[in-house]
Length: 306
Image 1 (cartoon, rainbow, N blue to C red):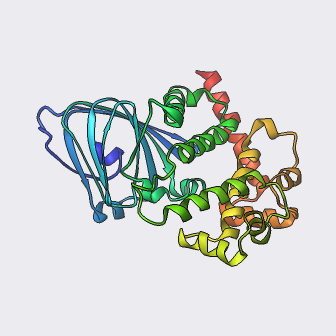
Image 2 (cartoon, rainbow, N blue to C red):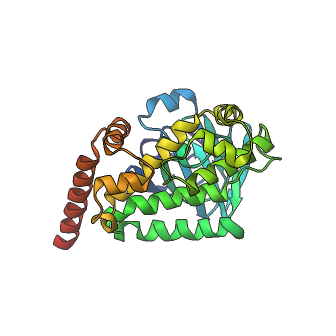
Image 3 (tube, rainbow, N blue to C red):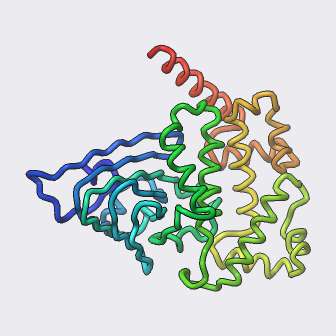
């Protein structure tokens, strides 16, 4: 059951006659919430297992009970209560728990995670302390959203889910002694991206203005982004589109026109915004807004009829 509902794994160590496991899986927008309670077991996920899946996710998890060894790539951690971990479904991994486990996870689509969390691939298999600092804020948020996400108005869920990924980005800041690559350049990239987010609504935002703010050349800025697998323009455009999509699905933004929402997020031309939005999400902004509103109305009607 576990390997059918919670990705494909090669499982070992379970007594088939007595093994117990309970899995709850909820799809919320394009995220997936899971809750697993299981007896001791080990899991090995190979590239063959990865290829059997349809969608790629980063899995953000914490435990209410149990201890588990998690390994992905060169990173390995012991995950227990009050620690938060992340792993990538698109790469091989392994886990092993020696006692009963109660795990809660949020599966974050690859596209969303990589746009919001720079270097998330290098963080897989690592943990953050959920008892102090930003980690404690993230863990408290995760517990609350697991309990209440279905009570959030459907039109507001996109904003709540996006805030969850933003908290992940803040709490899982790379540590130089744990993550390979240039610590200086990675930290600089984080500062540059924070600057971009603070000025995302400025239509004049460009590689030239960003480089000027940090007093280095546009060429160096482009090389900095390309080292981590993305271009400056793509990163800015994708962040703007994600923010606009969240507004289009939000009931609180229903009084704003599509043009106003586009300009709010730095698009100077409504036609360009519409084309970019359709290319990214497969629907025009108007179609997406209507679809989100219908989904919200259908869900409210369903809840009222129960």
